[in-house]
Length: 489
Image (spheres, one colour):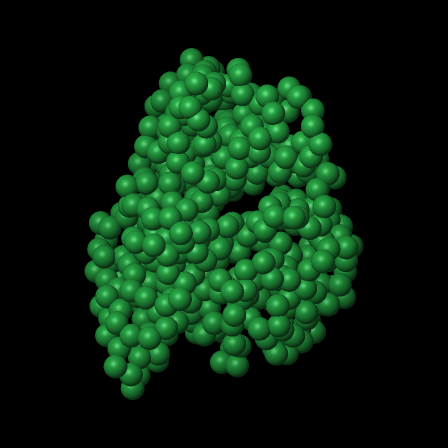
């Protein structure tokens, strides 16, 4: 995906905001000669537009940060408490409508929605073989971006299959999240009906990705019976199985393994800068998670962000190999070795995210803090098994037998004993297992909120407020003040 200088007629207000800081959509020559009205005249145009729609998945590193830092799993860390201050506010539950990181989540995901809408608005302009699969991928991506928006912000403006002029933005209301979820379900269902279980090109969306995300969306709405049916399809019909060795699951050499349902693809072959994190081709998370001023084997130095807590580390059973595979205990690692490192002024726990961390041999071009080639495992089979277990346990009537079967598959991989309980005890065991299996991957905060555990687990969490994040105030202002802020912000 390459940088460009491209003038489209009018995409949308949200994309205009993004392009002001970083223009990155299509690669078109000569420059400034092609606009929305004379584009989509051949299959290459559609493929370029789809590439641009995929491109906003780059922003996934933000959910890896916020999904952990907003929970009890991690602190913000970094050089100081004013270094990426918005993450420290989120850690302390003191965030409000003026927060750079939350605004980035809002505008980057809307840029993704806009690019999908731009393609889908023109889906009937010409016909060619394979167009249906391009359209299906665009529908999945729009659903993915809207799902990020609705679980962060609740009710959000819903725009489908059209571009907006700047004068139209002030007429748009925030849609109830039920309407947004309905559109997400429609897009994912349509896409799943078209796409195959496998894709010719690595990283492309498949039927399994569509159905897995649909099952997750249904689970978030407590539609447990429907979720169970959909997730069972992925388990029984899909080509997926757990990778045998959990400790190598997140390495570059194991990308695209049997557990992969949907990865966000990153490259270490192109440099980047701190001035535009959404412009990167590499994954920013591993470098940001790296050990500050580290000098030693295995790892590379980094910025000490998103540091796991001792509470998380101690929650694992001593025999659970996921403990050290997920969390690096720096003091234990350096004991007896000639290794030096520094502690950041933004906080230090003694632990680092061992799934997404800079390692020797997985380092991209300078600045290599920003250009890791490590893919983000957005949806993997273990997550599907645990979602299916929860759906079967919580549906009416429940099927605890199926729930225990799926849970056992996940635990067998890491040689943990079988869970034999049922009912609410089994529910709690599944929730705990999600964190053992998925910690450090950006799921924890959203899991705590949707299951009603957030107030008990997160210091400073206020019921009736922190279930969602505030709408960025600047977006409210630019929309003419028409949108109300989320309660108690």
